[in-house]
Length: 259
Length: 259
Image (tube, rainbow over all chains, first blue to last red; front, side, top):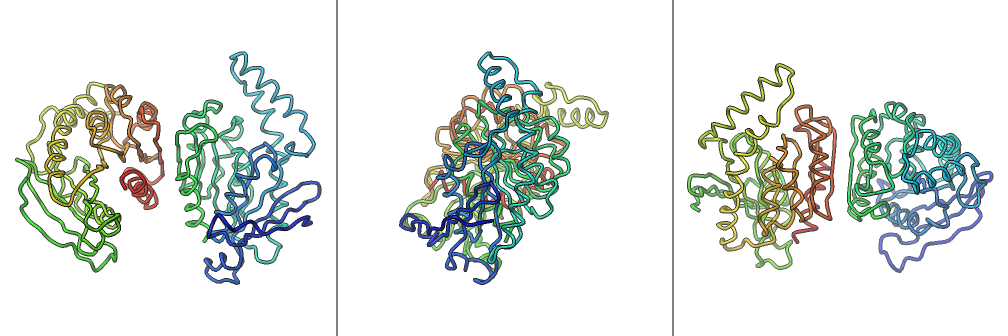
């Protein structure tokens, strides 16, 4: 992990994020960003010198550059609660090499949707599974590197956009203690079985009127999770219209489980 | 409306409910309870002399005496947020005369469930519709009386146990500005159509693993509500196991919409 740039975020807008430190890094070929709360904010923790719990902020597959404003806003919010947050570019996103199988599946998906044809399991599998297969080990490598940094400790939360990545990571990575999942992408059949192996507390966000999303698959996946403690928070507003109060509830979920 | 008793609630446990005034009343033959915040708590409102917004707290059909501890706890919580709350005994509950059709339907329901037979639409209609038909006008009469009291004003929220009562009241009573509904009872088919006429902000609580509840009917009803702003908050823990954080989220919903 090599840091490539460093800045204090502008503090003029929000009182609570005084001096959040934003550092870009590379992890091998993968670009990423780490946000750490300033000592003043970190004093919200039990002790100012205690390491900050970490939230892995998995982006939607649109590239970090495009989603930076949303990610940085969530990182500031988390920093005000005393959390460090980190994100890495997903495989095939941003400037990273495309995933040919997924690119083909995306073309097939668009063609099917434009023709009003059903989106087959084959298309969904080809779109999502290669991404999950590649992304999950990368997040684990990032976790190794992040937890070795001074000032960052457990417990670790995951908050993410492609729900199948979060599902598998929560199932296989014991260092993840709690997860906020966004049910807004297609779900391969295989994920319903993997979901049964997830036992950590979950907070699942669903946009009820998200026309590009399979709502029933989202409800089935929520049902499949093996966690004894899981919340489904469904709202109106379309795919990108998650209301502010839902973001606040997700933040409170992490405070309950990571502090 | 006649007040029949009055007490200040014990303040030793909770700092914020200093001196909540609890008054029992009768409205014709119907017993009820009104809780009003003390001036100190009411100062959380814009002005200490402004009337408190009101939350109608509809009980589950178990009788006020049986559910008093839960209702009083919610009333104290609401008082700390600056709300007055009021409840009345449902038709057929507590010491009120039974509803013969509903009693028969309850016996039929138990017989069907014990025999592992499907619960028919006829049973559900006979169980719920007479209760809704009788309860909704009673809540409206209670609202007339409550809003004529000094210190109590709008906007009015509704928080309730039998979701069909809340659905019809929200559809027909324009003074209700926002509602928290608990999706934990059978839903007559007719209510799905009535739900389309509900347009106020809704916060719907669902216990996902509530075995005595028809989860699909709850999801269908949530989908049917005409409200542009609606949240489904689903959790584990069984019918009576609504987690504390879900209660807190419902309280925040009322703060957003009634203050």
